[in-house]
Image (tube, rainbow, N blue to C red; front, side, top):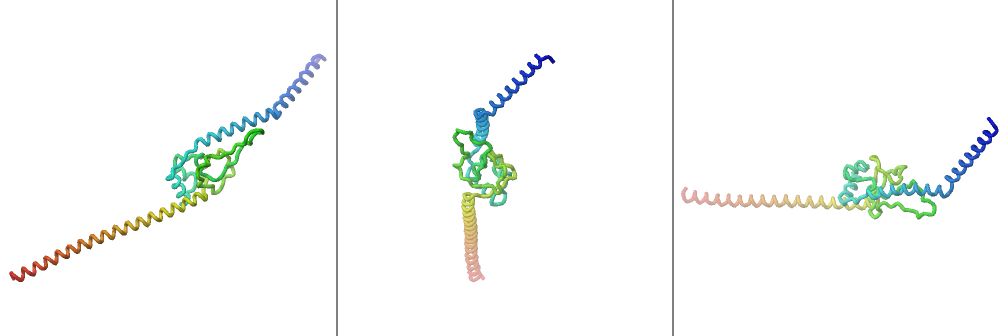
Length: 211
């Protein structure tokens, strides 16, 4: 190889090395790194926002069904889905008093966001055993199990009292109906007894006058 070729090769290698160092410095600069972090952060929260939008408000009847299910030991997410087929993860999370963790950190110089999925709703439930990977946006698994929160326990107490009142009312109605039936039967028997007495008197008179 000629000296000119060697010199050219050395220049190319030197230029390539300088170019590689320049690219590396650019990619690792705080400005570029922060831009990447911001992009990742925005993408992550876009998923969280989409997750929240899928939540809906359960009816009181649906909530009571789930509370009774926990009381009866049918406290898995799969059991909840059987009772309320439309139930989704976002909605379940909005009635849960446990808070998920986050994958994305807030970039420097930005306002911190707080994940509060529809916290205007009453949290009636809590994890029986919180999953290790409880990270927002969390998709519930069929085997996830729940217990009642303080609000859930309070609602269950109301439901149990209402059930007791309903049972007492049903018993009272049954007793009243049985009593009315007996009274009607007694009245009917009394009328029959009166008719029999009249017939007996008539027979006795007939025998006296025509016997």
